[in-house]
Length: 63
Image 1 (cartoon, helix red, strand yellow):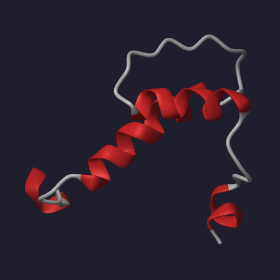
Image 2 (image 1 turned 90 degrees about the vertical axis):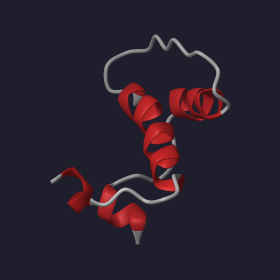
Image 3 (image 1 turned 180 degrees about the vertical axis):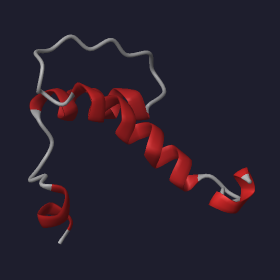
């Protein structure tokens, strides 16, 4: 299971608030304590959008 492999059970409060805003394309500034998941809140939407990109970018394209 994904949760077992990644160690995630669900989004933190800051992630639950920030990810939908980032996914909507709005500007986002997050201030929260260390360890609350800010980095993932910024990166998850970016990774998601890159994965949805067509045509898919493959590792061999960067060679």
